[in-house]
Image 1 (tube, helix red, strand yellow):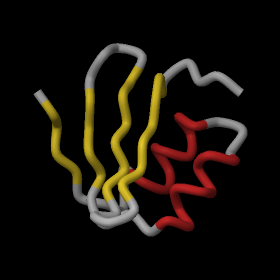
Image 2 (image 1 turned 45 degrees about the vertical axis):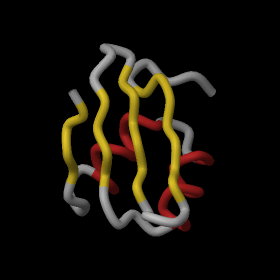
Image 3 (image 1 turned 90 degrees about the vertical axis):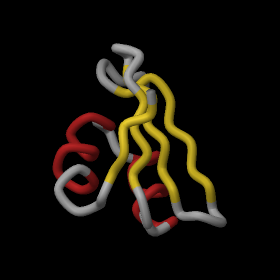
Length: 65
């Protein structure tokens, strides 16, 4: 299901980094995200809600310029 907030998400299994590319064009890397959380996000009905409730509040991040 397309998201109105998340354009693309990529997961690096080796570094456990979840890269979120937002519809706005902003890019953030969320660090040390377990693969299980990434898989749950992929299967969620609302990527934006999942991101806000389960990722933004729990994992460090860095904005990619």
